Image 1 (tube, helix red, strand yellow):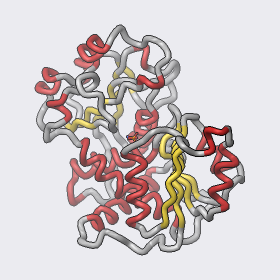
Image 2: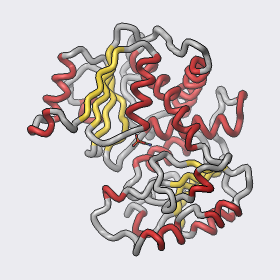
Image 3: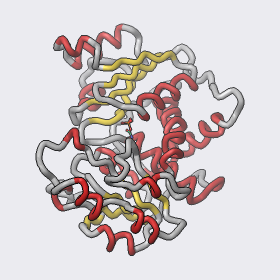
Image 4: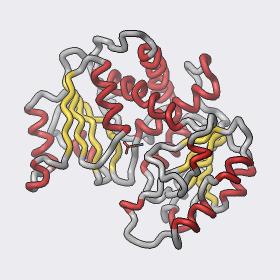
Length: 316
Ligand code: CP
């Protein structure tokens, strides 16, 4: 694997391989010494043009646990504020010897541009680009589902027949897009539920059903309910009347949570707007995988960096 830019381009075999390597990495996390020498002598640059807590920290932890040197770059406080372009920023980092670049950018397609422009030689990992994709989030979500469903027998398995309901701000969500493609590739049945104003104009090519009634979707007893964050920072219009109305109609509130079977997994990529898309009782319940998702993110990102940066990289 040369770059990891989207889940749409991953084959079922590639996705399962990555999840299986993440299982090996998770086993390393349970040891007293959590480090592997795999990327000793390599340099990973974390290039963040947008805010992040989970993704930035877990890529840093993943690279360090593989013994890579890590350079953290945040656009805030850098020469980007003086007008420096993505190309010049990337080439500056290349001159410092980057072997892998992890990029989060507000522009959809920025990681693709970096990977295909010839500006840099490094492998590129998309850590979230605009409203396009967030592939490692979807991979850690799939990893979390697989582990909860199959436990120690997860290795080599997909998610065939698993019913996943993804709820909320689909329009602005790169997490939803990456999950739709990956979950479908892994054989899951994906249902999107959102206010009509927060569904993209054309989803006819997406391998997912689209609905507008959360209670109807939950009555189908899904295996997984994934709540999406309301992305107020990307909203430049009124997409719903007010927060109380959104929570009442589209939120996983106490009543909806209490009606779910105890086996239903409750997922959220974080950061959560508690009381808006998800109530505290649901977020903090044993059914919630929120903290597991964060922990699994390190293992999945170790697997991604390992595949991109260890040994000879192929052309795929
Ligand atoms: N889930 C996610 O991408 O979180 P951060 O924005 O904190 O990285």
